[in-house]
Amino acid sequence: MLYAKHFASAPNGALCGEGSTYYTMQPDFASVAEHALDVCGPTLKLIYIVRDPIDRILSHIAHDMSVGRVPIAPGDELLRNHPRYRAWSDYPMQLSSWVETFGKENILLLYFDDLVSNRTTTVERTAKFLGLDPSLLPERTAISNIRGSQPGFTSGILQKFAQSTLYQFSIRRFLPSGLRDRLKSIFMHRNEIPSVELSSTVKSELEAYFANYRSTLADLLNGTSTNTNK
Image 1 (cartoon, one colour):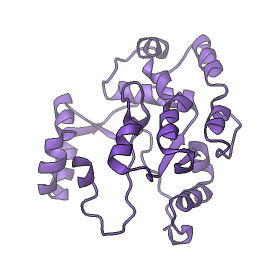
Image 2 (spheres, rainbow, N blue to C red):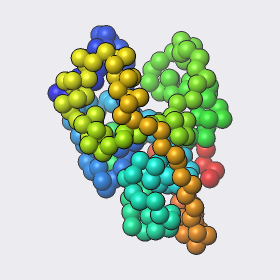
Image 3 (tube, rainbow, N blue to C red):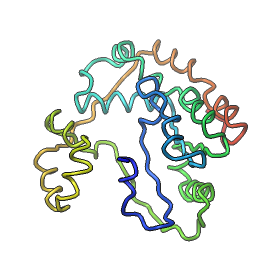
Image 4 (cartoon, rainbow, N blue to C red):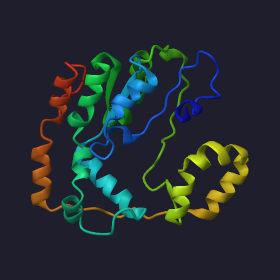
């Protein structure tokens, strides 16, 4: 099984995990919760981190423009032509299939603002959820994935190859890390992140649509959310 190969080098008894935003990107990626149940079983622990839905939309559009997934265009136009951006920020809709499949007791809901402003408490809460002793966690102050820090491929063909099963599970493991870094410096570059603006009309529509997302999430998880203020 390809998925299991991700954890092949983990020692016996190790707590393994991984993450991807694609797991909650319906309708583009459907039935992911059901597939996770088939692969990982019903005791899988899930952590769902959300941020302000409109901020997430703007950030996602900017990133997609910077790597060429969508053309450079006004934010209103891109939202109109790609409704998936709003769907991907509809957190209650995205989370509902996971709650139905794994139960609310196996899901930890975190807010990005809490992780930024109160990292220690948030990390301790996460450790307890996973059955770990928070006191054993190393201190970490570095910030991952700073805006504009992620490079993109100079070619779409190269990107597809790097993400392919052939490269990820066959070729990559034979390449020394130094050589991989060298290839990245040649075939990847940092893209300028454009600014994305929305008209007041569209922004008001989004604000109305997402007005109750925190309370809806709390209801979905029966009060497991610790912050219900927008």
